[in-house]
Length: 179
Image 1 (tube, rainbow, N blue to C red):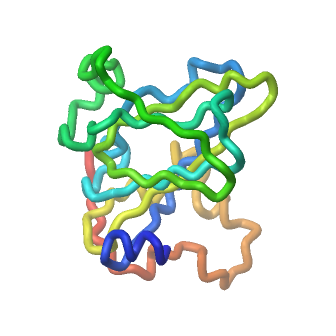
Image 2 (spheres, helix red, strand yellow):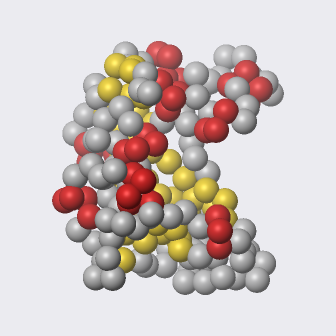
């Protein structure tokens, strides 16, 4: 949190809707397509993704690739980005292997995509999003991803007085609901 607050220059908020990307080997249909994170994150364009692989991530395991300079293009129609209509063969995709403890920080308008997991037997895991407290936050970012569970289920085995439970409720957030 200290690194992000230093980077953003303000008190920082981590979205409780953690999105843990799980990519099994050989399931290329589940590799994340090119996209900007502002579309699902909403709230503020000043949301930052911190891509953290939960383990070593070499070329075979895939990782994440960034479309060089794409953050300068502004907010784009997400359907046209995902369909790659807004990209062309000159798009330069940047990628590096990750070691345990590495992370990649990029803004919500950066076009990025997953890379295929071509291993025979390894799973790739990665996660997290941050923004300043004063910027608007989408109400959906305060709920578990995809609604597969609710907070009561997820916190069922936690100590009742754990300070991390519902940590965002103690913050003075500018919560907005988007269609």
